[in-house]
Image 1 (tube, rainbow, N blue to C red):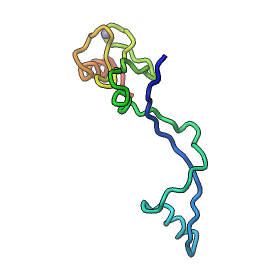
Image 2 (image 1 turned 60 degrees about the horizontal axis):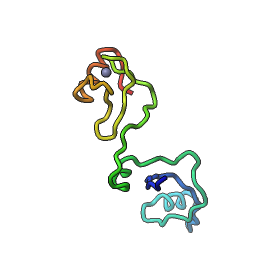
Image 3 (image 1 turned 120 degrees about the vertical axis):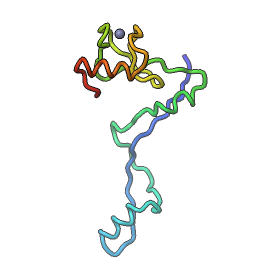
Image 4 (image 1 turned 30 degrees about the vertical axis):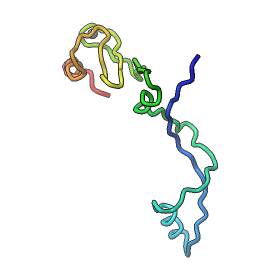
Length: 115
Ligand SMILES: [Zn+2]
């Protein structure tokens, strides 16, 4: 096994202590860009996301081949399940189409809408 570096982002939460003359003023001050971030009390469950743009940069020599599609999309020509690559977008494993553009065009004609 090998250790890979997967960049992620997620939401955290905390409580700010703001000196103000009213709660409305305190809310305004809390929302200002210049106000320093509070210390982190916790993470927002379910907020974690993988940053796909940075993965190959952080793992030199690694190429991500396919990313599983959320909904099954089938090639309008051969009926095979489509694959998705970060650089090339959507493509048919049988290479029925020259580009993602041609593929979408054929899918639209076949009545399949882009998600
Ligand atoms: Zn195909």
